[in-house]
Structure formats: structure tokens, C-alpha cells
View 1: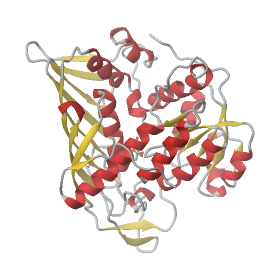
View 2 (view 1 turned 90 degrees about the horizontal axis):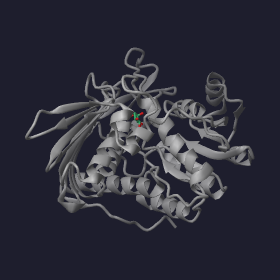
View 3 (view 1 turned 90 degrees about the vertical axis):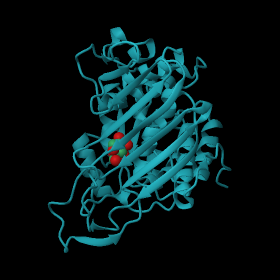
Amino acid sequence: MASPWITSGAPAAALIGGGFIGPVHVEALRRIGVEVVGLLGSSPDRAAQTAARLAIRTVYRDLDELLRDERVGAVHVASPNGSHFEQARRVLESGRHVICEKPLATRARETAALRDLAESHPSQAAAVNYNIRYYPLCHEIRERIASGSLGRVLSVTGSYVQDWLLFPTDFNWRVERDGGTNLRAVADIGTHWMDLAQFLVGVPIEAVFADLAPFHPHRFKPRGPSDTFTGSSGTATRANTLEVEVTTDDHAAVLLKFASGVRGAFHVSQVTAGRKNRLTIEIAATRGAVFWDSESPNQLWLGSRTGPNQVLNRDPALLGPLAAAISHYPGGHAEGFPDTFKQLFADVYGWIISGRQAGRPASFPSFADGHREVCLCEAIASSAVTERWTEVASDRPAAG
Ligand code: SOE
């Protein structure tokens, strides 16, 4: 079993974005010993409040000021999706490492440009925060498939469902069109599912057939800010909200064709009552099947045709080497969502500190992975309009 460790010699970090997920980055960085020196928020006033709550000493007025701070060696981008392209580009061009929230940007020509830029700066880390890969049992599934012990993969199915946007009075910046793919549930949580599916089976999704549904054509937008997962239904009134038209997807269902003949399907929803944040994935293969649920992340169901089914409780002593390496607590000591951020950042900062000098290839989700996800989003958006199977462009010209 690997046990918790603290990095030494890691560059200091700055954070862009003080909403729901930015503070999760800060907590995880501190757990591995990375100092967080400054915060850039949506406004200096809001950022000052968040910085005080998180004990971050410096609040930047803008990105120029952040990039002038010579203490900062790495920047975590956790701002709204429409800002990622410009911010990640400028951070990379400043010579710093960047860890960007998903989706990497809102258009494939932007993510292609970021991927190319990252490839031309090979000694800088350029990671996308696909944290779900870093549940130990997800690494375990990947190892079992890669070793051939499950046989040939036949199908990958599942869903990612939440309920925090169930009522028309629930609102957040994610609900509005982003000017790119204009996808919401697919971009926000579907990209997690597709990233995980491809990571587990080791082959890309090549074609999609999608159906999208915006169930609430109108929502009530608060006149002030509204954070992710903070339902406004109790407090919304005609006076403090504005009724706006909504066209982004509350629900989507997508059929998939992977390389090597693997078939799949998933659905996403942000309007499924009682499902707070639940990703499920089931993989059927010729020698067995596996099923994993993010709301019970320490258990893996193993299906058998010829013997009893089993449930593997996460215990590093029972896992393969890659899964055991990202499992810092013994069996029975539950690991969960915050631990996945810790493990992903440990992978990134470990590579920065020692891996890159040794020529070790990065194992964290890269800007190329982030680009592929946005190509998938574009194919899904297009398929929903044409009502046809749509191939996923494996490459797109970069933004000029
Ligand atoms: C909101 O839907 C959200 O915070 C996503 O943006 C995250 O990626 C996911 O981990 C939880 O839900």
C-alpha cells in the first residue's frame, strides 16, 4: 500500500475561480504540500471573501497581475468554461504549469490550439481535471482490462445523473449557452463519463448518435450570483430573478461506437430527483463483467457467467499495482471524491518534481485528452441536430 505523502520542492500554485470546484483544488493541494499563494475570482470583492475563507493571502485584480507574481509556478483554472481557452493559453505562454477544469474549452479548434501549445512546451505540465479516473477501483478496472483477464470488451454502458437543476428556479452559469457547443449536461458531466469509459477500455469512441432534451424552456435567473449545487428554489421570487429562455440540455442519451468494435451507450441528466452526483459504468467482456457506482466508490461488482458474482471492497492489499499506488488508506477506511483530486494532483506535481527530468511520460489526463472530449461534444451536438450517426473528428485544425 502507498501511504499519504507530502511533496517537497513543488512549485507554488495560484487558483483562478472561487466557485464550487476551486476550493476543492485548494484543499487537495494542501493535502500534498503544495502552497496556494493567490486567487483570481470573478470579481475582487467575491475573491476577497473566498480568499479569507480559504486563508489565501493574495487576491489578484486580473490575470496580468497573477502572471506577474513570480512566486507562482503552476496555475489551476477553475473558472467558467468559456474562460478556459484564454486563461490556459496565457498561463502556458508565461512558462507555467497549468491544471485546467473540464471541458478544456468550448470549441475543438480552441482545444486543438491548446493541445499544440502544450506539445510545444513539453517540460510544462498541461493537465485536464478528469478526476474520476483517480478512484482506485477505476484504475483497477483499467488494469484488469489491459491485462486481458476480463477477455475482450464487448460493451460499455452507464450514466451520470444529478438533481441540482431539477426545478426551473435552479440556476447557474452552466445553464447558459457557452457560444461553442452550447452543451450543458453533456459538457459538464457527460465528458467525465466518456473520459472514464475511454480510459478504462483503452480505445477511443469513434462515432456517436445523440438525443438531447432541454426540459425547462425557461428558468429563473437570480439577479445576483448563483453557485453550483446551491438550489435557489426556496428563495427565488419574481423580484430577485429574471425569467430567461434556456436551450441547453437537461438530459441527453448517446449511443456509442468505440474502436475495436466495442459498443456503448450512456445518458446524463441534471434533473433526476435524489441522484445527487451519481456516475455508473458497466463493462461487459467475454470472461466477465464489472460494474462501478461513484456513490459507492469503494466497491466493485464483478460479474461471472460460470461462478458466483463477487464484490471487491477497495483494499490496497487486494488491488493491482497502479490502483494500489493511488489508494492511500487501508481497506475499510473509505476514500472518495476529495481523494481523487489529491491523487490527480500528486500525479501532476510528482511528474513536475521528478518525472519530467527522468523522461517519464506524463500519466495524468493531458490537453490531447481534453481536446478529444470537445471533439466528442461537437459530434454529439451535430448528431442531435441531424439525427444521424456522426463520426468523431480525431483531429481539427487549431484556432488561427
Ligand atoms: C457540476 O455539475 C459538477 O460540479 C461538475 O462540474 C463536476 O465536474 C462534477 O465532479 C460534479 O458536478
